[in-house]
Image (cartoon, rainbow, N blue to C red; front, side, top):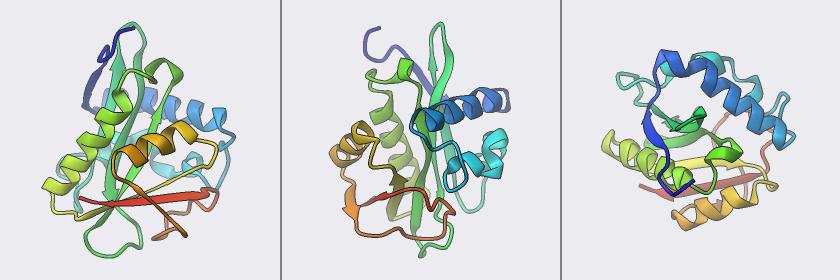
Length: 167
């Protein structure tokens, strides 16, 4: 499939089940299908109502729609729970294998960074796993720098890599 063979668009209620399934599939792929990871987040089945344009504090979520497959992942941002003012978090960014290598991950990050900055956030944080090496390389290439310890209180104690960048 050629690069950009996907559509990046804001999530809708009709996407909630597929987005949840994509997230759970990727979490299972990396052994994170248990408490301490996004797996246990209560909002997984209702992402469109949590990450909507009128959310307060500001938040957003976009899905990657691949022709012939449908929703193959997504990513968003929201205020970091327990974080300092101006700090948001790149959240629930997961792509099924069919959506990897298309440029969708980079497009998601750039969309989230741009939207978060436009709503007044000044810094973005993210949590991941050491085993997600391709994701880490992408984050670094988009200006995220590694941190020595987690920020905020996400409830994702299973994550063992943390990054942040200025917006």
